[in-house]
Image (cartoon, rainbow, N blue to C red):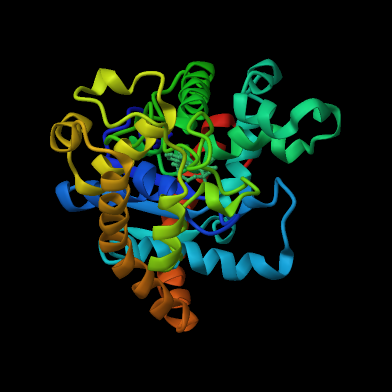
Length: 343
Ligand code: TYM
């Protein structure tokens, strides 16, 4: 066999976002912003960022909106600072090896482990019997997304940590079962101050695309007025800002706003607290709103420019698909050979 038995390739970064709705501040601060920082600080690595549309169909979705939502996520990647010349931006469903590898890995994944995934439990709710197989098997597709590129680093928000652990587990199971060191152990990269941005309406709940309340999140496509209004209405408490980070304990709404400020300003929470200790929300909220508008407005503008020219987005995606396909096809060929398939 001429497979590489030990992974000695370059550092490879993979991550993705589902095209299930507009990107929000949690997606930006927990994921996209870190992708851009990694891209700009580590020129040696190879990078692939997928719009993971096969994942988006595991929950109810609108077929007539899927292609547009896919372009919109790609536009957000570019507007946020991902440079298609340095990072491949591609569409998961255009690289069929993701699905093939998922099937190959599915026989190495125990159902018990999938049953323990908190996101499955949250999404399936009390009706797990009626949940689709796709929703249940979702983490295996996610493992395939990562392993198909033999990715070494996966920058994500905190909510994806358990899925990443399962991906590592599946990689190790494959290597042990076939006596190879084929898949590297993908490292979750969960960095920055805002690894878990919370809802603006309830600081104990994650900011999420699926929250029915628009006021719970800031979308990257929100205009300045909307951002200011949402921050003004955000949940806080009657107390002023504390004089230490510890003073935020038990004050979920307050903690969330300080976290968002810190991440946007590229400061630590301690630095933000030092600046605003003892101030009321009447001072802090307008400052946060100004900062959010200053950071997000250029991105929003660039996104609408890109969305006005879908052909440009499509050309970038086609080039990314080609690059991703070449890498993915190679991996799946080697996996078939390791697993003993004919041919
Ligand atoms: P998705 O589409 O829900 O979210 C995309 C990215 O945004 C992060 N994120 C957050 N970070 C901080 N605070 C929040 N409130 C918040 N909400 C979302 C997520 O952690 C994620 O990094 N399963 C993934 C998509 C996926 C994937 C992959 C990711 C599919 N295959 C392979 C990495 C590698 C998901 O649903 O992300």
